[in-house]
Image (cartoon, rainbow, N blue to C red; front, side, top):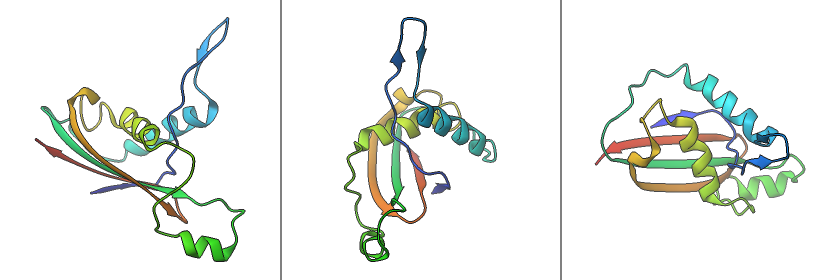
Length: 127
């Protein structure tokens, strides 16, 4: 299991204007920081079909009381962000480092939890 110490962010749709197409700043920043973080890890892209396990530890808002923070720590995350958007953001960022293309992924297990520190855990097995 690999732990990436970066707060998970949901993948956003591209915004289209008359002059250009762009992604929102928060998602663009996440992709940039994740790419820099991945440079520390030595990995050879895997071939063949893969089974990927992802756990997202979503950072709790600082505005929450200490009581609510203690109550939610480690519990399943019930925020409004869709799990599949967290998965897309992570898999897009990992592409090219751990696998050549995300179409190699035949099976995914993903979960999201509340945490005081944001991070993503990643496991991959060949099928």
